[in-house]
Image (cartoon, rainbow, N blue to C red; front, side, top):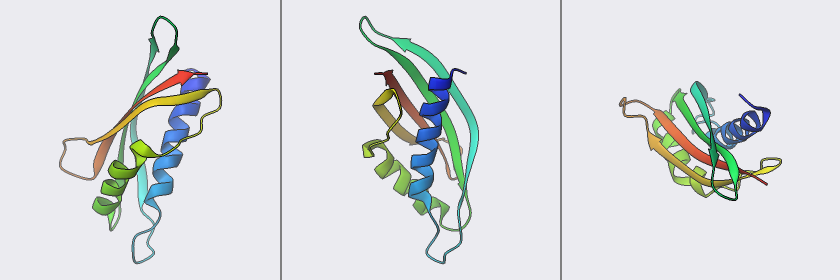
Length: 109
């Protein structure tokens, strides 16, 4: 994986972790990274990478935190040195638990 991809994925994970925080009883939730995939992307004038992150949450309040991530992460301003996020979507992973998939397109500045 290229350093630019590492920066983008790390920034997305940090933004998701910031939304998780602790549950209403003060117990920390655990954000688990299952898979990180990055593929080069280019148009006629732009270059970047398409990212797919499979994440899940463990702990009490995980379902509410996942809903918060799904609702707020796509609209969050996520700074990435030398890049910007052109698109970001969050969907359940389909396994029926508290896992989710983040799909993002990071463009080189």
